[in-house]
Length: 387
Picture 1 (cartoon, one colour):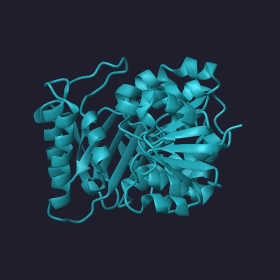
Picture 2 (cartoon, rainbow, N blue to C red):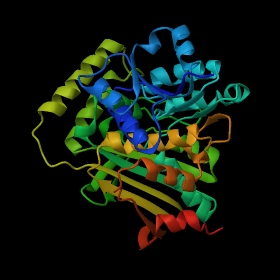
Picture 3 (cartoon, rainbow, N blue to C red):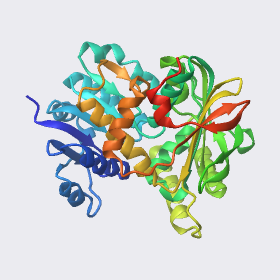
């Protein structure tokens, strides 16, 4: 008998808080336990007001204590990044404790070894759903929906932007890591020079508009071709405005461990520099977040797009809550390490409606010769697949 239904590690972070609030909108959370090593002022009390129990401890400090903690719950949601440090550690403890697992891992390099735990997780009867946020997460499900409709495709191109005001210290550590491109076999490359970045311009809807994005490492180019009939996938991303992107790239280049001798103190110092820039730069209009996904062969297929001022924590935390509901309610029948491509798009959007405040603004168009054509309703895409 497990004491808890869900334990959330890193529960005091912004994305975890959005996930907890969303979860409370869609489920009974009285059996949830929120764990953080150091709660920010007011956050622990806000968590308790949702009806969720709290605990102050550092579960990463002691492997035995971590395993014992996870053995007390049916599901652990690991919201403690960066995942290149925590992902495999918590997943291994979950497998040992025979506890189902979910995270919002967006680091490509650690996604590969985590997928390598599939056999050991399956042998333990564990379902581990990795990368269940916005991107990856919602993006994977949308690609799955498009491929279910279109059949096998040659190309998937994902482009996204985040507003500099949304970048927490934890988020900037992850973003820097994305400059180190990763191949499917795990080979990683140094942060390129600014002139060597592979860039493109994308027209996002809404407040975001036309933005320059660069090729970055992300899990979807690894998981989409592995789990779906997709030949090639690529990811582009950016911080807006462009000035912020340049600052982020410069600091990523300076602390890149593949290029120069570095250490955690040097990275911590660089994070403080970026935080000071973010918090003291002249205040301008909020651009928000943008997303575009092209799923096509020779320019013919489907395009998903959105652009809104939705905070990044909500864009990530709400789909994570939807995935958590699906997992806790037995909606993922596979054991092993799986990615959001395994989710039924219909089931995902049904769960998303339960936890979301509404809005969204996601658009879907047919793609003809690389250009958007007539609009398609997402509900029709999911309800009546073409093949």
